[in-house]
Image (cartoon, rainbow over all chains, first blue to last red):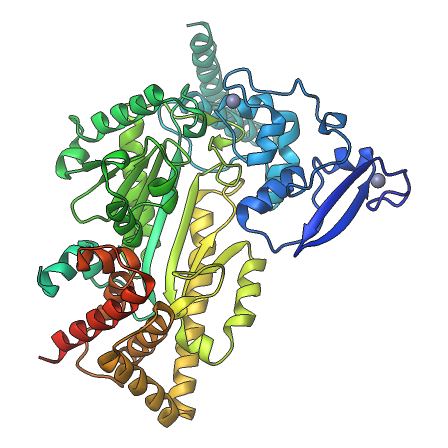
Length: 177
Length: 356
Ligand SMILES: [Zn+2]
Ligand SMILES: [Zn+2]
């Protein structure tokens, strides 16, 4: 049987989906399953949590092949003990460290939930974020420096370079302490 | 308890103020989801760690901070409340159903006018909610940010440079911001335009839900519009997108109201007066019919077709006729049939107060 996504490779993962008591079979190859992060059969009539669980794992459709075929059983968070399989089932992280533990799998999920976005662009906490603020500032300053050099505004370039050095120095020291 | 007294207990003080565009926008709300660094999320937390979260937040809200001093925050622990008391808090929108029903070690901190509630150990450690009457998204975000900064003075948040504020649910990560407005849109429903507007709003990445009803069916023509994305956009951009859509919907609703008044004045008057008649005379009324009639009466007030009735009556009665409040007013547990009778009585009494 061919994969319903690419219609090329042999389907090796088979899902059963039940809508209004009607059973529907889904067949997909491992390559496509991986490429999509997780596999979600097209439907938009779920509640947000069903939907989310669907995004993560195919809306509770029990894979006929063991899930370990495409999720290593070892993938779990060492801090709270949550496994990726559990996370996919309940759609909730157990702790902040889960974000690190499951990082390799998160981009496709975030992309779907957040309109293609995977990176934060909003508020930064004042205290915990002071070094992050400085790093952002550093990036902006470096861009400005390039611009000054291109424009041959060497006095401004020198000033900017000094500020950059100062911040870099501060960040270095912060790392040591 | 007299009805006047009961109403004043049931309605949060912030609701009594009139906000901008309040003929269409009932309220604006912002919620920020936050977690504390190095504590596992509530879903995985034990009693001890949950209580530590409560202790650390309550101490920073009642501590030496200037802003906390200016305002008095009261703490309510979920495990100490009766089911009916929790239900009442849900019906006032002060806590989420999830906090009332699921959260084992949940708590809420509330300010005096009930415009700020800080839920603890809900899905996330901290959920700051700010409410305001009418269309005031900027104001509620500003207030929520103030509380956020205040808490952050004594607490390290779970935050990641790449992912932003780390939340239990992947749908909240990034800003942790959910902003929403509650809108009364009877004319768009009557002129059958709502069914075209909802998909258009969805396409812009915003969610539209009917409230007080199960699923997406709007009871009383009240809809909630909120942002869905929390990652990859700044708070300001999220708010701007939402405010832009809300402004459009307000204009559409006003246009539809004018269209009804110009073209179908007699039919409209007939409908609205009949609904008022139903509310004044009913002896048994289900929540769905009550919501429909209340919506009509509210439209009648806004269009000055039904004079002499105060504007807040819809907001009040929408809350007062919920099961939790009906039972609190009755002082006993009621069956659905008994509730329909009590609801009718309460509505009649409330309208009588207007006519004195
Ligand atoms: Zn394939
Ligand atoms: Zn974890």
